[in-house]
View (cartoon, rainbow, N blue to C red):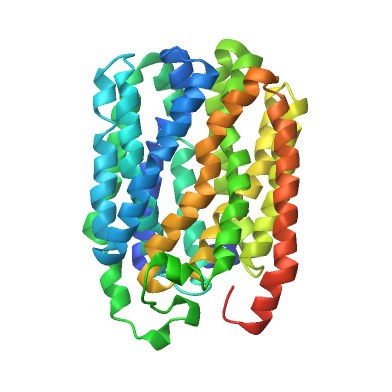
Length: 415
């Protein structure tokens, strides 16, 4: 892939996408709190792994009411308007914990942060979908994913230092960078719902044209999304261990150096994304999103499964490299697949339903891992993850050959 083609990958997108990209970099540069949430609950508040898993699961489940209410409002009130309100409330909830020391009241504010953040993602994804069409979407989601990880390559390293020495700044810095990003989008990006309503139905692919009726009525016409979302539960269940089980294991292996090494590993994850996202996107842009998701599943199986055998930092980095390539493929393709089948009238609600179903893997992963460690060594999580991913990917392959390829032959317009 030539340098010219690398830059061409992201050329010609709507200018608002580039503004959102800059906002993503700023926001993720200050994403300090949640990557270190497991360590905060166990090392600062003194919770056991099982207790921490319960609270992290509760925080994840708290996104659900915000997600569905926010999606409904985004489809009726406006994507950008809802994003600004919900993202601002999310940031403001991070400020009080900076002044509460090691009080467990902090958990309440973290849960409220999750409630408001639940409304952010459906509105954000619908906003990006409104601004793109066809193959532009894969490039746009790839660029924004790259933007998030560009900032995230720096954030965890700063957070690892703040965690041990200036804990209050962990919360204040997260809130401040989020508010800067929100302001940038508020000033420079138009309300995308208004832009979409100006388009004629003929300009939209058939599956994206407006539908009447409830989300459930419309969804029954697109059962593939339900199946796809259910399979993604297991992808997310395994991937979530990089945030929950991996830091705990690195603490066990490296002792007091665990937080710093985990921060380095998280930054390495982001660095791999920065270096390889353009290359991976360029090499796979012609492949169907579902096929790319299948490849991602095999990489998750190998990358996470091998952690069972390793005890040195270089091998942790090697494992992270493998599952991060899978992460790139998964992150840059699943939203494209959903967007291709979501009617414009229900975009945010389709996104929220997908996030709810597939996000169940994130929500229950900490609690399940906590229970698992009550009976088995932590290391066994990785061998279990290997077999879970093999099973999930196999079901997706069956779906590809029995349903999806037949549909693609019939309807050439769908990715």
